[in-house]
Length: 330
Image 1 (cartoon, one colour):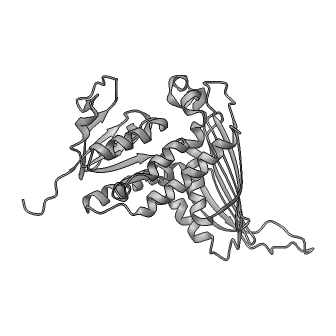
Image 2 (cartoon, helix red, strand yellow; image 1 turned 90 degrees about the vertical axis):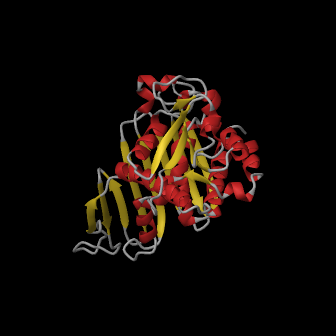
Image 3 (cartoon, rainbow, N blue to C red; image 1 turned 30 degrees about the horizontal axis):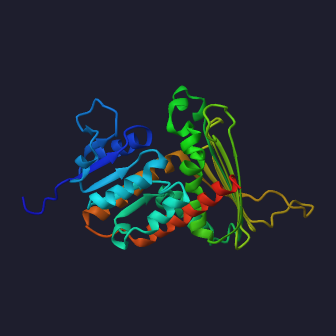
């Protein structure tokens, strides 16, 4: 039938955890189909599974959702052997040599690679964009982010790549903290000072399971990001301005304003609550991933180039992460 667009053929490198989530999103769509699921060695009970990477080369796009330290080698191989689009999970790369390798990619290759910094497509991003220019918060001076859960205490954690300190020592920095640094840096620009304090709290595995990062931006805004696999589930964000403050916790978004709120004696008291609405950070994370994937798939359907700004800003965020790792080795 004229005008009917055939479903896009996709392949994925990876099959569990985050890769499994991406597969499930794609399987719900009618405009694309997951044709191949690649693993270099394992024989999986799925007819789409293959141990031959070249099976994926005829796909419209290939998703890289494998351990972080494998991302660059797959991108390098695919840019040489594969002519379609590439969706790569964060972080793009894990060391300085790979950073130089990415920089050597041709401009044409850079415009067909999309890195999944999912908060760029989140409602949280839109809220920050709106509130940094609002009168009710005034000038933003500090943001505090705590996102953690008890993954390091699950039995399967010990045998996962995340617990492997030899190859993924800073896994929580690469997989979690990188998203929040990317999100806030998009709005507040150049970093003036930065500190990184990693820990292995659970004593399970050999990689760090906890990360604490403190940043001061050029405009004197400060950011603290705490991520851990060794605590109960905590999803909280606080944004403090000169005229009010915003909190996201327990599935609620609340804003308190204005600063000049006094009791009968003229003393400062907590400002009144001017906004209170339901907002789930966990749901926003899930929705953001789908929106990020949706953006990528629409690029393919329209046969457009991925805007080069996405490649460049992803690399800038990755540079920050590499600098933090370097702090721990000097």
